[in-house]
Length: 98
Image 1 (spheres, one colour):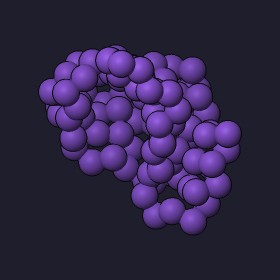
Image 2 (cartoon, helix red, strand yellow; image 1 turned 30 degrees about the vertical axis):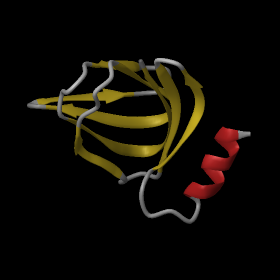
Image 3 (cartoon, rainbow, N blue to C red; image 1 turned 90 degrees about the horizontal axis):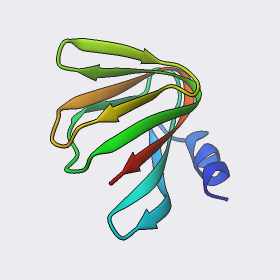
């Protein structure tokens, strides 16, 4: 089970853990797991994406905008937009790309 594997890997990790949950011809679904304080620093993706919080709380940062996402909140992410994610409390998210 992918989500359980990611949670187990997170226990000894010092950075966010990501693993593909499902791959499609034109996209994929990733599981992202964070401990509080972990961050995905500024980055961009070539794909239209959706970040969905399953557990915990994260802060989505894009330019001057800072948006707190709680359990079951989602954030669309446009392609090639620089953004970052900071974990405020232990979190499990899905990143749906494509």
